[in-house]
Each structure stands twice: as C-alpha cells, then as structure tokens.
Length: 257
Image 1 (cartoon, rainbow, N blue to C red):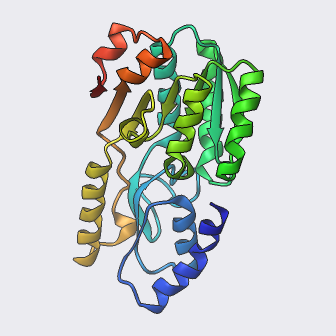
Image 2: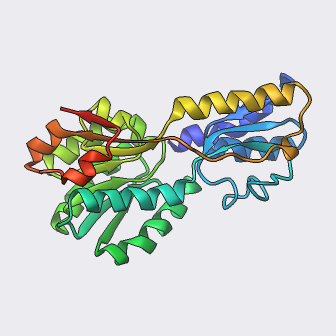
C-alpha cells in the first residue's frame, strides 16, 4: 500500500507533462498529489472520503480552488456502520476495528467511531494495518482481547485484501461489518453499508462534462452521496449461528440467502 501512495507524485507530474485538461482522482492521497502539482488544472474527486477535513476544499458549497466533485461523507458513514452492526447483533460489546491510518481519511473515521461507541455500549479494539501481513496478528490479538465483532474502515487495502479478511473473520467467528458491498457479494462477508458507486461515478462524469464546457471547479459545489446500499448475507449469518433481527432485515437493500 505504501508503494502505491508513493507513486502519486510521479503520476501527477506525468499528468502535467501530458497537458491534461482535467484530472480525475479516486483517493485522497492521489488528490493531494495532484493539488501539490497544479493549481490550475481542474481536479475532479470521484467519491473521496472527506475533502473538507482533509484540506482539499474550503467547503462543500464553495470549494474555492481547482478541486471539486463527490464526497463520501466517510466519518459520518463509519458511525452509521457501527450503529447498524450493534442493531444487527445487540449483544456485542467489543469490536475489532481494522484501519489503515496512513490514509488521511482513516483517523477521521476512527474518531467518529470512538465518538459513537460509548453511547451504544461498545468498546473498540483499533488495529492499524499497513500490509496484508499485519492481518493475522490483529485477529489473534483481538481474539485474546475477546473481540465479538469486526468493522473495517474505508480504505482500499480492505478491498484488495477482502478475501483474506473474510477468511480470518470466518476462522475467528467474528461477524463483520464492511465498508464495501463487494466484501459481501464476492467473499461471503456478513454485512456491508456502502454508497452506490455507479451513481457517484455517473455524477462525477457530469463534473468532467461541465468543466470541459467551460465551468470553473471553484464554482461547482461538492456533492454528497444520496444512494446507499445495506447488504446482508444470511448464509454467513447462519454459519455464525446468528439470527438477524427482523427490523434490521427489513431495511436491507440486498439479501443473500
């Protein structure tokens, strides 16, 4: 993961060399590298975590520079995920949180989780994951600390390593809430609360279109997600010996049976 991040400044320099009309980015480190390279070429965010608190824009309504696009409201959505996990499994009190703190949006999510955890009777066991090799030790430590569930923050490492995380969650019998629906659909994770990425990508394309037609990035407000998807895998719930409360099941958008 670190090596990927280190490539962004070189890629940004390449974008400038190619005289790009617009730069589209899908991660906060990529946006930061692009901002460091140019203050004139418009930069379109494709669903970034929290552009205000990470310093990419002045505000959602008035970005104020050459960056605009879509925000994921990541800290707020992280808190929503923890609340849903507690609703689905009311008896849990200790939750393992896997995060990648090198990503600027990760500490914001951990802070949001910590702010809500006490109010719902949950203690967090936060483990910083730098590479896939860190995962087994995190699960082993969490087991010794009697973790009862798992939640991942929204960084790409947990997409790339989704099969490994799901395998470890199954081995340690930890019901898990993920940030990406692929963790449920592809590798049998228990649940995920995710934005609708096809919707965000279509909306990001409209920013590119407006920029190419002469609009200024500074004049285009940053938009937030309006479509979310709550996915549940009842096969995994059965394997874990869980019964999902009817109220939680009723609000699921996708149910795998």
